[in-house]
Amino acid sequence: MDQRTAINLFRLLVLVGCSAPALWLGWQWFFGDLGAVPGEAVVHFTGKTGLILLLMTIAFSPAFRFTGWVGLMAARRQIGLWAFFWLLAHMLAWMGLDQYWDWPWIRREMVELPYIRYGVAALLLLVPLAVTSFARVRKAMGWTAWHWLHRLIYVAAALGVTHLWILTRADYLLPTLFASVLAALTLFRLIDAYIHRQ
Image (cartoon, rainbow, N blue to C red; front, side, top):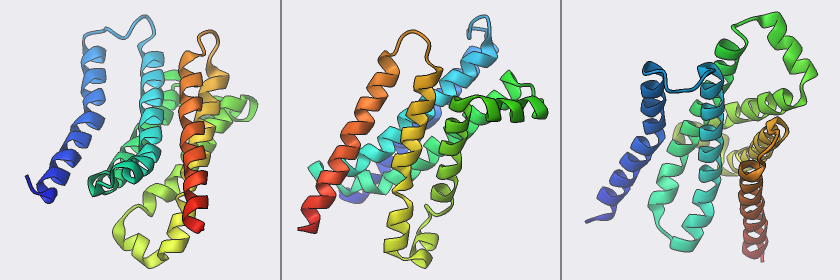
């Protein structure tokens, strides 16, 4: 199998893997298997899915360093956009299914609840990354400016993990796992940047 075919197959796997949760969620919703409060289940599911994909987007860079396979970098933009999609769906699900589009109450929640502010800030930081993820925009910006801008993904991920941590009430296993993965990825990025500057 030639490299182009392998890359296309990998991109297809990313597409299937990132869209499959939506099919599962739709199936669960249709058959009423999301529990007593389905809206809340959708909000939690979309948020966790988006955060996992965001961390996977960051992980593609060290994976490329270790393997040298260009398919990982070719699919990184794709999985990053999927992460943005799921986190945007998380926000919209919270506004619609949890807050019922009650804008005065939504504004009040954003002002009064720290974890909501962290989540909104994370999503807003991802907007310029999504907009500038295309090759034409990257070329127009220049590599250096584009590269520095996309380091915001680490800040967005940290805000997302903080959002989940504050929201958690009992079992901290998942937020601890997310925080540990992000810390490891950030440490790798700092060490890698230092080594390649020598």
